[in-house]
Length: 277
Ligand SMILES: Nc1ncnc2c1ncn2[C@@H]1O[C@H](COP(=O)(O)OP(=O)(O)OP(=O)(O)O)[C@@H](O)[C@H]1O
Image 1 (cartoon, protein in one colour):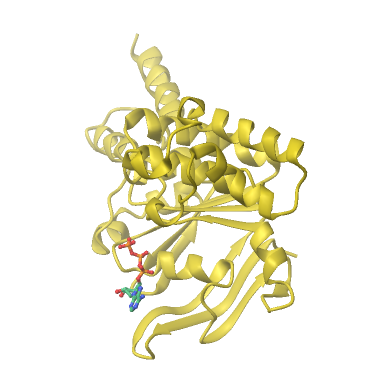
Image 2 (cartoon, protein in one colour):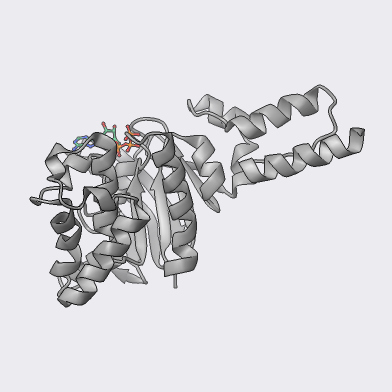
């Protein structure tokens, strides 16, 4: 049984705008899934189905094999935590600390556990220094970190992040990359994120879905997706800079293996230099 699955999921807004068209999506435990697609492709609409905010027009959404219903919606929202694109909608308490504590407190956890989870989430997001600040006075990137910490403190089994890098500075993006990479191993979480930042997908994801106009037009590993350069260009997406660069070096006759992430690139470049030494 998959932790999260959709079968032939379709959805239209106001019975007219077809936002999702027969989506078959599977997320396994501890996977890191990237969803890429141009503006309006349907990524956020898909996410809104994962914790019952939207109901399918047709098709199914299954969480641990169960349909979402009134009787299990509370349980589902414990399992599936979503950080939405607009952090303003997700931070509302008088202080950051209270904001991050809101979710775990609502889960009925005791004070010690809540306080431990809040400390841990603030530490992971490097926002301990913002603990006493009112969230509405924070910068966009700081608010984004608070919103992520709030969901993380609920320790969901599936963490969904819609455009998590929007508003983050380069250090924020690097921190995010590091912490998303440790969540599956350290906490057993499944991570699903959407982004326009394709380089980040190559660094984090172990599986990718490509969406266009409400459909999934490709899925596969980083290697399988980022070698489909024509398809990506056709639907207005970028190819990550590392495979793009290596591809052009290979075309110039340089003997170098393909790479997708920074670490792989360092390795293949070193090997290529060793060969010509
Ligand atoms: N509340 C809404 N009412 C009507 N149409 C909507 C609504 N939200 C989204 N849509 C439409 O549904 C389609 C999919 O939008 P969605 O926000 O899911 O795309 P997205 O892939 O998340 O885009 P982006 O990358 O710009 O965030 C678009 O055509 C959009 O205009």
